[in-house]
Length: 442
Image (cartoon, rainbow, N blue to C red; front, side, top):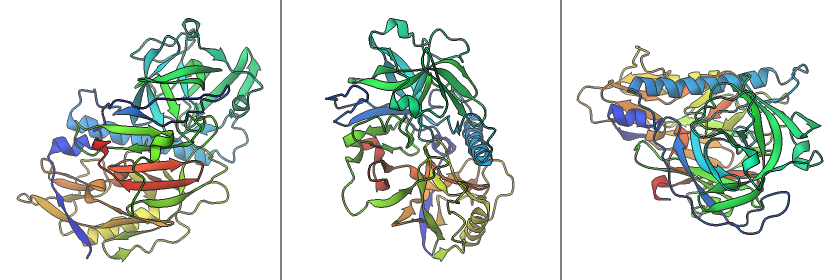
């Protein structure tokens, strides 16, 4: 059996897997800019922190918060799939929410804000004065009247046309809704966005005066990094980005790389590249073609249609930075669960205390355990995951758990499985690349 030794971690390290991402310093500068789009010629680096990094929670509270957000996001995605063919839905819905925050400044002079990074939606937006309905945020609400670089977007703009729902009254007015009926509503504008010393003029964004729903109050708004024309990455001259998410040491940092800097480490034989798939029904998402899964030496007998993207837009697999663990279509997860249970040499834990679907009881005297290898077979890319990317072991709780769960329909490749990899999204080539990387050294 193909397997590896996996060290047993303390409970502090066990939970740090969900909260391990703090700030780093942005670098590089920008150059030429066009009138309608930023057109940044050089790449730049953005700091990231995990949404729970500043909280004072117990170990169980931290785990429960991460899993609850994951379930909430799954509910949004399921709602999107179930309402796709419903013609009564007036405005398309989007994933929203996320696990990581970026620090940025908006306007001239710049005002600092935290924004949620979301690879599952496109719109960039922040709360704006005069607010008719706004949620609490830790920084002052952006006041466009105090910025000399604020300009409302013309109704004839191509980005106004790209909105899923808009009207033209006092400029290009938008409504953007999320899967749990959270929403932002306001006027589209262009503004200068600053990431430390990197200033980017003419970024199109939503200035939201009516904003409601759960999951937004970690920041002042969202930065969409989806595949559509409204997203931040699509507004760059070189439409690509990568992120590198650190592992379980809470003192280490995570990084978002934009533009030409995104592929800074994309060299060598260790690169695994797979094509992105388009779903006209959900154009923002990064769909991948998953052909199979191997546990140990066993290729699971999963039907080829299990992860296929269906003609009605349902099914398929997306990769997502905003979902903590990987969710597999139910029949595939059941096969994975059965094979892991048969190959692990320790008993299954039946207590259900962790909130994860499959856990094992650790021997009291063990310093490490043997776990089966796990390989995801994407088209053109066999991704052999290190043990710490799919097994979470806690010596205090006495359990080792598979960091995966089941879903109905759509599958999601979560951020735990992506840790310590440079994950490169290239919208021009329409590819996704994975490069093993020491993310704390970027």
